[in-house]
Image (cartoon, rainbow, N blue to C red; front, side):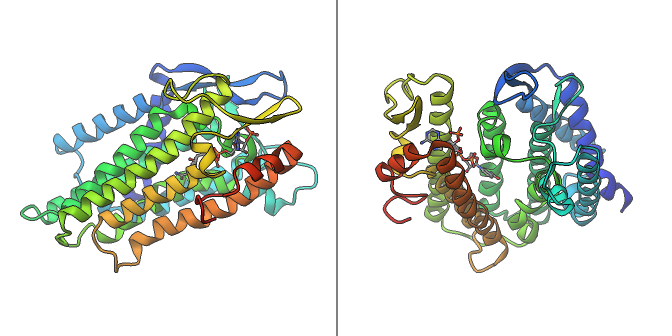
Length: 359
Ligand code: NDP
């Protein structure tokens, strides 16, 4: 009981220690440091830390020091422990920061006060650390929940559960591999660090994203036909292609404006007043084709479990719809204010918000 409760604190401390110790590379971010006017610097080593934690988990289980299904057996206590950490983190990061003029205490606690806090002379960036621990704790949960399934059904495991775990592991490893691209996202330039981001990464991300496996890991093999599993994999990778492709194209455009995507696709823009908006490739399909990709990936993951009549796996793609449709709305408002008439011209050229020819 107590060890389950403490397990997230131990994992998060281990990730912090590894993040500080494992060699990393420094890079410029997209957000400007208000004190210098120059891009904030980040020390990145997420993929390496991820791989070291996985190796340690595998070794501990293999040596019999930790049951393979530890995080499944203790999932409720672990989620409660993470909840407490999320609250302590929120209170300390918000109440320890100077108030933002005009912001209520409720808004401060929920949305945060500090935009991009960094500690230990920039070696730890709050947002990058939060996303790193969230991803690693989620991966441990996914692996441990899958292990639970395999331990309970050794003779007839569900290929769908294995596919689900494989796709999720790909999703997390690939995200950490492209960690730098994440520096150019909404979370970094538009959000502060409070309950939403802090509790979101310490609790919601690692413990809710695996809701399908959380609920269904102990169920027997549903014997989903292989062509349906292949279709789930294809849906996931179609989504990944849209999301990763769009994010990479924008990253390239912001860092090397004239460069061709994949060496072939020259950027076309809507331009004016010295500002430019991408209007080719992925960014010609809709203004947030990356959000559609994210939803496709979530659908592929949900359906791969082979239990479409259970409500739990659906909570994951539904969460993305609830998150990304309002986010598109707010991002468009932000861009309309930032780009003015240029944004209106861009919207004429790229009329669809998320789903080409539909929405
Ligand atoms: P975007 O990457 O679409 O970033 C939006 C910003 O990009 C705008 O504010 C604007 O900022 C710039 N921009 C918009 N249109 C153009 C254009 N045509 N040309 C050039 N720049 C443009 O959205 P997010 O940051 O919200 O999301 C990033 C990724 O993260 C997405 O793939 C999303 O799905 C994913 N995501 C994943 C989540 C998860 O839990 N897995 C959760 C949330 C998001 P600027 O001021 O720089 O011009």
